[in-house]
Length: 301
Image (cartoon, rainbow, N blue to C red; front, top):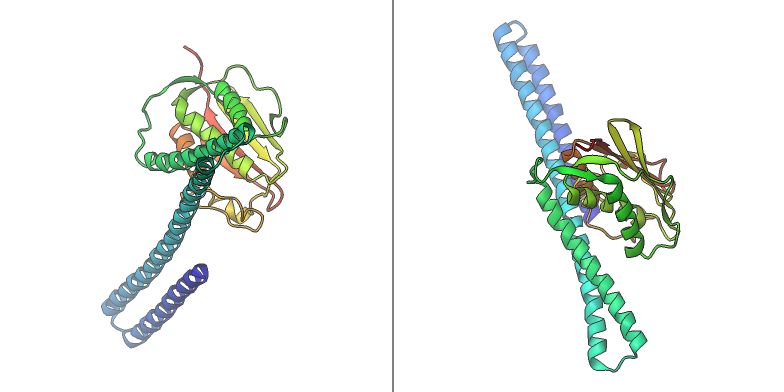
């Protein structure tokens, strides 16, 4: 209902702008016909009407962008509310169960494991929100050092497999990565970027996880980390938008996937701050996705 209302609002402003531009053009033509012999008045009139038309167009673009930004922020708030409320309700339920009745040791251990998973989910959501806020004011030169990017990727792949309880081989290296690939940067930020990319691949891979990670060096000055999944895929029209803050692709295939719309925004911000770039490729919905981080390589001194 709310989406339809916003679509109607956008359509109204675009239609209004088109009508106003049409009226301005008609008045401009009339002005030219009336004053075609008065060169000075003719030129002044054409310039003024051009400014009026440009102002109408710019104002309409601004209004449409604000409406869409508000829509994205509303989606973000709804997503964060759900991401916070659901694990809290789950933890409360298990705590009340433990408080009200005796529970067998095996069942109690199961409750503890579920509550720990819920707290990890809560912590992950809070960290993403805080990290997104930090990205807007981050210092590009802070805490730089030589770090082993290969070790970061190895650790992140292992941690993601454990955290998401993946079957052996579901998240794997296509080829064995080198023992050491040196880049200059902030180790924790790079770890965050890699983890977010892996978590994104896991979330959007559906029930059957099949994710391949490759760490490549196409030349002596470049490092590539490529994450390829066989999941829900991305429509080509969405590929240029998925790295925007709060932006989430809504399709029938991923309608049950929850998130804040901040993960890929954080990845792009960190990678760019380290002098690199991140790109996304997909053949379309249902045909998987490939994300690639490109970073400048360094050498030990």
